[in-house]
Length: 318
Image 1 (cartoon, one colour):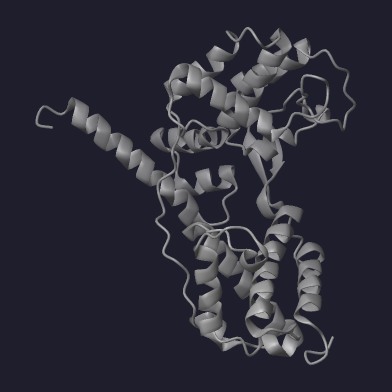
Image 2 (spheres, one colour):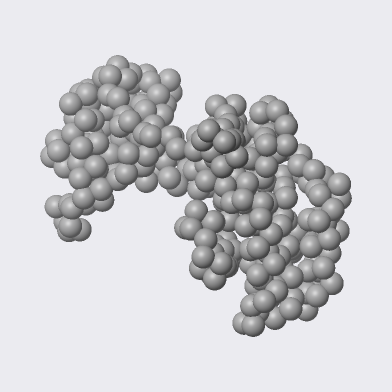
């Protein structure tokens, strides 16, 4: 591939192929990177009034990239002149810039088309908040409430109890919990989970998690093959993440909990409960599958907030 004869769009296709097959990025990651860079190329071609070659990508000025980020930041009505203009949040804008930088690195290393100007552009500041866990009492209340739902059959209640207990007791993401197959149950003392970026980790299984899954299987009205998804929907198909999210939304409404009570908050609760019980950050990082310890360190903010709250309630001088 020549930098002078190949188009930027051809290079984008090559880069995405590189991500998928050499870097083994997940399909979701490849799609997100592709969407971000395609929007960038669309803007540049409208701005310059012509299709871009790979060589042209080495001439993109910092001002052009800043103009693109400003364009994406401002919301606009959809139309031919407002393509890709959707009012990105600072976090999404930062992710878009990260994708663009990664694409330019590929152009530099693989197609000998460097662009130092890209490194001069800084992304928006992002306020990193502490994770929002659900308290232990609230988790027990959420799970207990499932058996009181008249719209659920007994096996469906058992299934949802098993799913929520699994997310909380093992610190799993929804996608990780729903990736289990019939072959994985009855659950052993530990699970091998493949998380983001294909990273594998081992998580211990509590007795209560194993018992909930066993109860679900005992009530399940469908026969499953060894490789079939373990958790099934009402009509027998694989259970969707949207169902788990809707279940939590319904439960928090009935119990008067805030919007922070989401399925992912159960994973946060797993981490903060371990931290409060004395687990070290490195162990929690391994159990959650975080690539960086700095991500796990955010949970210390939550634990400190809990200590301050308890201090404020109990200390006579508070």
